[in-house]
Amino acid sequence: MAGAAPARLTLLGGWQLELAGAPLAVPPGGRRLIALPALRGPMPRARAAAVLFPRLGLVAAGARLRDLISRCLRRCPELDAVLQVGPDLALAESVWVDCWDLATTTAALLTGDATALHALGERPTACDLLPGWDEEWVATERERLRRKLSRALCRYAAERFHAGDLPGALIAAERAAAMDPLDEVAGRWKIRAHLGAGDAALALRTFEDLRRALRRDLAVDPEPATMELIRGGLERGMLPQRRVVRQPLTVT
Picture (cartoon, rainbow, N blue to C red):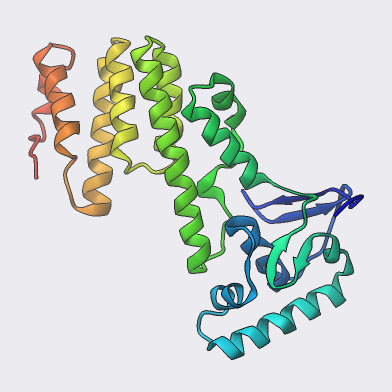
């Protein structure tokens, strides 16, 4: 859309839509109408209707979608510069979406770009996608983004660890673990980084925190790879054995 005013859509940490620097008051239904193509890309209207109204039949869902589009454009005419409605439901080319920016950062992490890790900073990430939205399609996208970012962070941590950059490896692993305390891959890279830095106390604390979380939330023990990592630390004399034997390390 040539000459269209720039629009910025924020989905991480909460919903916000700005057009030419001014926030737009968009009703809840309109927010979902815009968030769907922002997260899944252009899609046929029939498919969009089925996702937004999963409890309705195809005909009823299509009618509900047409009504929603009409009401939203009447209530907020500025949405015509944001939403493209035709055979497909899509966003206008002038729209910038923070999730897309996060995807670019994720891809850069996979190349080992150190600036990408700094770019994450303390900004909201995948787990903060549309907080409070409990629709299944939102939960699916939230988990998809989290997994992609987590894999990228863990791969970055592995590269930095093998390059001898223990602080860089630890930062990346901590970011991944913060998104999911039950992520054992991230937990193992945290443990490796602490062991590599000679900090046995933090390595053991990381393991014990992970084990408690797994037992509390999933009723399982850590994976064999995690157990072997700790046993390796014991065998090399890097961990205080007396603290570990308080609770036997059993592999399930």
